[in-house]
Image (cartoon, rainbow, N blue to C red; front, top):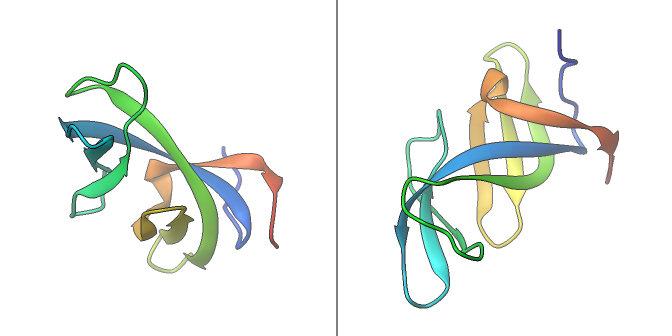
Length: 93
């Protein structure tokens, strides 16, 4: 069983590329987050490709089973804890 994330943990989210734009930005979909998100386009990215985006947990709600992650350049994203992958290292905690 994976450990529960804590505030300050680095969190990795899986995202699917929805659209690649010419200006170096991609629109992605993150499971359990109901809005598209814009990220810098990874090299050789294609529509439908899965990519990992990382950030730091700023809020953890164990009762609702959600974690809010600050993604650089994207802002805050709140997802279901089971859809996120906490990394082993802690930062900014």
